[in-house]
Image (cartoon, rainbow, N blue to C red):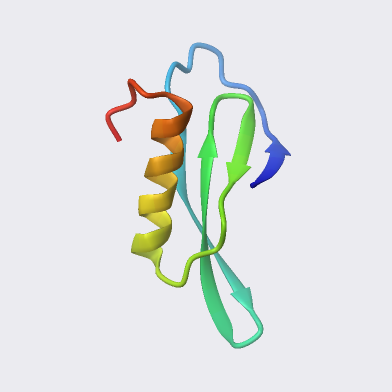
Amino acid sequence: MIVAEAFCYQGQSHPCYGVQRQVHGLDTVFVPWVHDGCVVYWGQPQHTRSQAMDEARSMAVVMNPRFPG
């Protein structure tokens, strides 16, 4: 997992998550990410957007088990 610093949002009590599309040569991959309010955590690239979104939701739940994701 790659960790990147990001701006902290005050009062955020749950992780935000999403998918970033990246082009690698002739191929396109989708990279899941989770933002916990201070740090953006990147997951492993996936071949489909839906796989990446499922992975991002799973990462968010691991970070905060009370997250309904």
